[in-house]
Image (cartoon, rainbow, N blue to C red):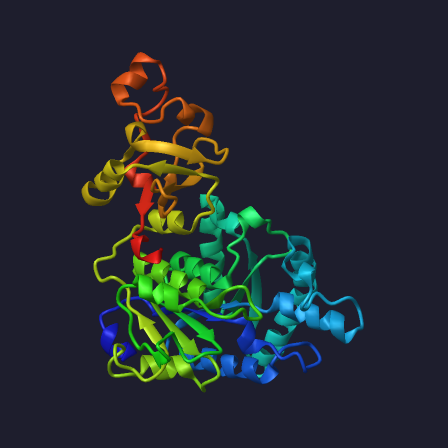
Length: 389
């Protein structure tokens, strides 16, 4: 299937593989890690590489591994504690668990002579365009060196406003940065379910999908809703996504070998939009950490989404946050639904004076200090979240 679909490609196929906490955790083991599962993942990576596919791995599990280590050493464990959701406690547990996680991966990959490197990232790293570009270059150079990049969110230093919060979203951001063809989210379930039946293929997410994704809490912070969100962002970025049962032997290889990805017998597939030709800069915007938001009226939304217009002051109805000019902010409708994001040309104090005014009014009041566009269309990316309510 891979050769058939991508037979005209000049560059190697690229994939990002995300591994969930529940999949690789084992509280009964000495380090809280399921070593047999890591060996399965190692075998999968080697199989993909032998097919000429470039692989980046995004892993969860550091916080859980840190918690298990504390419990094993009769120290105060955060497991099942009210403090387990506290930022400082998560940071401490992550600091403990990161070394445990990467050491476990090193042991598993060493059996197959595959060297690994660790990349610890935060949402803030994706906010700065230069840093973002350097992340991409580092990933590419590791690939060239034959080293597997293993990415995790740097919970040790990340603050709430600079966190992805779920590695599902981090993996989608890495897939966009890496210009991947596929994001494979390996989890402990068989895919996405509705009415107790696995859904093999989802082209467009509906309100029913989002409602069905609500489920019980798990060891990780993600859950099925964050996986749907990752799939949605991949879809917008022109990246294929699949949620697959990670406990199956070489499940990714099996998935790619299917004659028809729409009717395969494993996991759930979210195909990329064929018409999506999003530029690298807009992919960066889609995942960049925001500093605030402006709310816009229906007319502004229509002009931006249907006519490709820039955002003007006349269409703004409110704002949130204390952002500066040239920072990335979110664009919301008047009910608070996220519509997109972009680089704002004015700071929040300036915009407070500009809300709802036309360009002529702004000039008369000497408020149009820079360009008339508050967010230029070249620095703006919109996403349809009407079905995510």
